[in-house]
Image 1 (cartoon, rainbow, N blue to C red):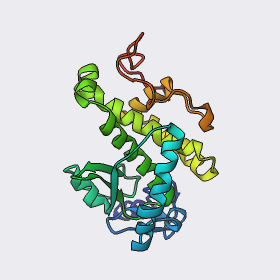
Image 2: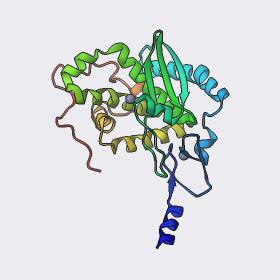
Image 3: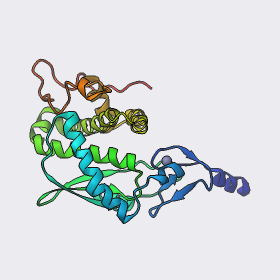
Image 4: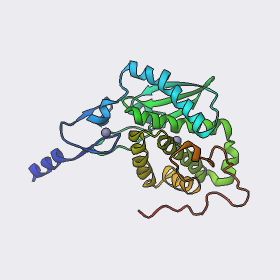
Length: 252
Ligand SMILES: [Zn+2]
Ligand SMILES: [Zn+2]
């Protein structure tokens, strides 16, 4: 009996904590905090000081530039970076990170106000395409912090649902951004991410569902006429947003 149990533990499938794919025994890497990463994700992981510097100084400026062009917005604030472990990221939320063989859902980024602008936290070892997606999500939050009045949004949507507005938009932005890059690997990630986010029964999943209904995804920047950046999301002139209450999730 015991042998069978041990055997089933040995045979337990491990999943990449980034792209979620199942991995063969010996076909993956275990990072400092117990996160497990497939070989493909490992090949673009930002895991050396040099790569972190490159992301913080070069890649991030390119991304900010594209964000401003695609969405016709301005993000004029000083931003710096901190690469932290999954454990340190969890601590920022007052939580503890416990790795498992399954995909470990966790906070992947965070924007924190400091005395001169914002600090963005990104997880160490994040594959580049995921780091870009997470950075875009945090940039959307920074734009919200600079342009929205949280008290007004809370008054309109309530304490719980106001998170949907923030997280739904930031999740919509991360996917729409990747779709506009026109690079296959980023578009694939966007489609994958859209599916997994819509499965979530929380502010991200419900929020994305509502934002997608109001702002359908497009493939080219010139098709992007109405965005949550350029329309007032609360309160609408003729109807209230979200479109329906209680919030509806897709059935599958
Ligand atoms: Zn992977
Ligand atoms: Zn967020």
